[in-house]
Image 1: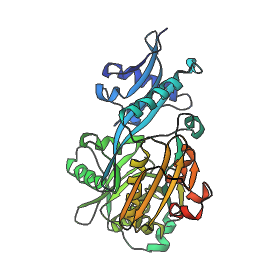
Image 2 (image 1 turned 90 degrees about the vertical axis):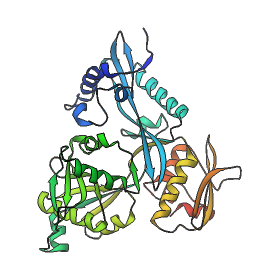
Image 3 (image 1 turned 90 degrees about the horizontal axis):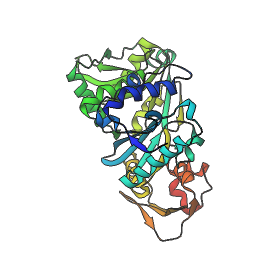
Image 4 (image 1 turned 30 degrees about the vertical axis):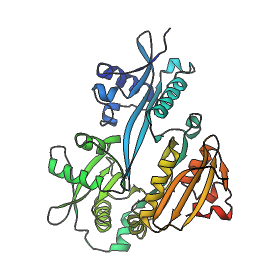
Length: 369
């Protein structure tokens, strides 16, 4: 019986959607075509991202490998997302998932992918080199916060559904998205599909003159904002003021940059929690760490210094900050800190402080920013 790994094509679309809906629908119904409309489309380009194993012509396992470009403070990183990891219930234990995951990780290494991410149970994916890390801020907002902090003041913003047939609004929203310090590159024709991912609904935020100052993508019940972009910190605050005033209690997740947005929201929210962004695997340590270090420098001055981290199986990574210059490169010098790859990801990317991951000697104080 052949178990060759194959890439799917447009003709396999319905078969693949039925397969994913079956596997993930064991506990509750799924509709992947509607759940992730920007990812699953009946085209050769989209379906070639699905790597699969067939037995006697029937799908028995699938793993999606989706290439992306991530812009971080003006630098572009090549990223690949793993998703839709599925094995037919009757073929679990046959090793198909391991074979597909190993195949995809090898393909990313060979293809020059710099970093990869996925969702899912932490220990399950540690076997393939992934670790739960990253850092995002989740804010909880309630009508009581508005009453105490803004009184009877009006936000001066109205929120309207942002349908696909409003190309002017969508173009302005995409420009706001692309102006963020860190964002994934989205083709114009897929932008609205991304906003509708995970059953979210997009809303345009309009000021008193009808000018679009931001957008929100939120769950259908309004209790979770999955994406927000605004032209200023003030507009962000006013948008959330208007949202909570009309929809009630909600939560919103913001990336660490820009820092000023988190400061503004932290002043009046109910609470804020720090959490990881997913499971990550780094293939290009100097490129990824250097880009993120320089992005951190955009948020505020970094203290000058140098620290070397010995990463088991990789080498010694040297982080150097001198004035406005921040660099990361492999070094032949002795490291101040030693750890394995999984620990290094938590050490460098959070969500906890580096000193809460491993003991830091005084010479490695630069890490604990």
